[in-house]
Length: 361
Image (cartoon, rainbow, N blue to C red; front, side, top):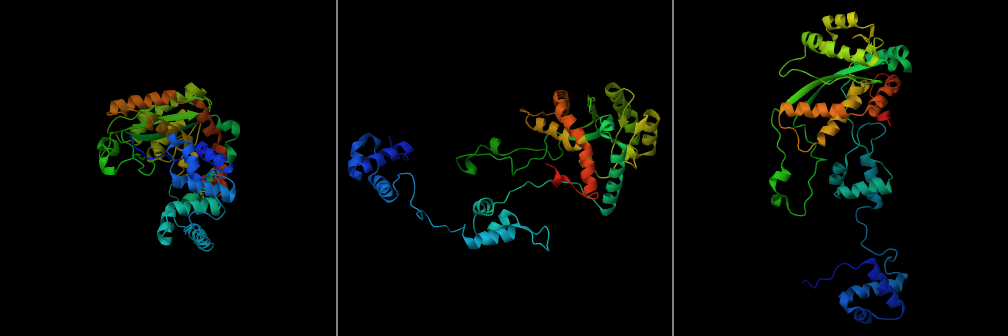
């Protein structure tokens, strides 16, 4: 059995304070509770604290280790380095870069930013590349869609899209951490190392959603490229059947600007089969931020997939897992995403066709 004394609890400190206030010295206090095996020097320090500030748990103002990082000079430098200059946008540095430059810890930089400068931290958001021509078209077409699609009409829109799901999705090593009390070399490699095939097996799916609900999940055949012919013969008929099931004949068919969607024969097919649809020159280009499947539904599915344990190990198991996730997907978040469509169009117009994700709550 070890004789090392554990850290004093708050109750122990209050006992020592009471005895000190009664006039007892450090040695007498230790003898009062021999079973505690209190260290005499520790009791002496607590007694001095009680004498100087009247409490065993409060330190005297100005006591403790002097500040070496959160000093006025560093606070000013952190403010200057973290924030972009007025005439040089996007020049702000990361906490790691600031820590390296000032030769202080990242923790100190974060504490200065949070506690001294009252700053907030935000995760970076991945967005699509937009050229100036893209922005002009996004602005023009978003205005036209806002005028055409009232709130009531938006509930008749059937949004469609395709998505590839991998058995081993990319791992974010920054957020996927393993905690251990020992050294890295002592950890079982089965816990630490995550294998991922160079060419991970995957499945492409196609689906549609609307305010009334979600259609079926359609699986693209293995090793098939979704060109105009395959899309028109294998996917479009099934998507249109889902439209009729959910909305009858009163629907507006939407598809994005993928080559298979904008091909002449695909556009002609949709025009022949639908009373109303969004043509290729009406949908804003490079706009996953305007399709509910892209900005919400696929993410919900991926979140559910990442929680699976164990994960699928074959393409057939992946298909079964995705089907189960799709079937269990609640309608409320889908409906919420669809009903935010007009707000997103408005924001797109507000930023003149540029990125607007930073304006979303």
